[in-house]
Length: 359
Figure 1 (cartoon, one colour):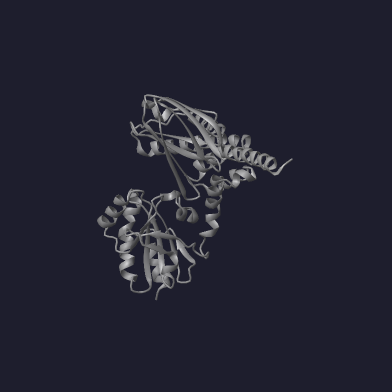
Figure 2 (cartoon, one colour; figure 1 turned 60 degrees about the vertical axis):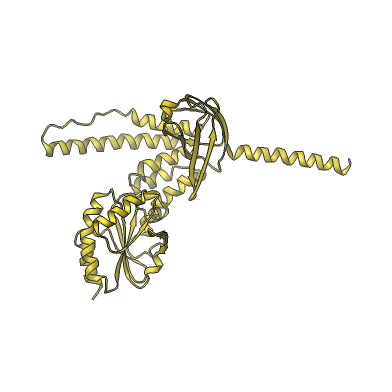
């Protein structure tokens, strides 16, 4: 066997291995969408704070695309014609997309097991029995009836979720189901219980790690714990970190323009700020607004004089995840030594706490 022949054999083997590796790390999409014609389809997903974006031009509604994919991830498809979107759980392997451009959000996806499982779970939730009580005009009784109904419905949802996770612990769809139920609508104890049911590999997925971060945030944000550092930009793009406030008492205030309870708290914050701003206290406003215009308009309307930072990813952003913030308002008072002194101070509670701490 001469050297050239050996080289050709080795080269051929490398090509096969490379092709196999690529096949295992990409979603191979074939689509046929009626009415799309020569329109464009955009793909986007976020993984480990990296945003993947791509697009493909259809030809008479048909296109193929290989989307690089290190692990299953929720992917958003959007089209250039009517701007509708379709969200699916994209997985490695081959899948087909079909349907009509006018009902883009209902595109049929076949060949994606993780997506099938997630849709199966969500369909089970939608099929749960129960009709929300109608208003009778008696506000107090209506409120009680709605509360009883909500508790019963949640018990049914808990049961469906538990069954799904126990049946499919090795699938990322189960982690997404847990995240949607107990992280998006915060319940740490239930999140922890269901997280234990997931397989080790799924626990290490991007969605599993997000659940873990939410669970761990309770310990990391207890009074006496060292506040996690962060880095966010102000309206001019300048980055600020928690360590920039070292030596001061600083209130980390998570809020958003659309959060009315947050806006109602602002007068209390302004009063405390005016009294203690020259005594070693300040506030760092962390806006969870996706639209910068809404954020800055609210700052101007409420006349907030302290430093304002923004995380356009909202309560799914890294800072909110580290602090376990999934609902607003939320705040953490950090001492000069960087440790959390108190949290979720409402009304005149902040002013009282500062009076106790600052003499």
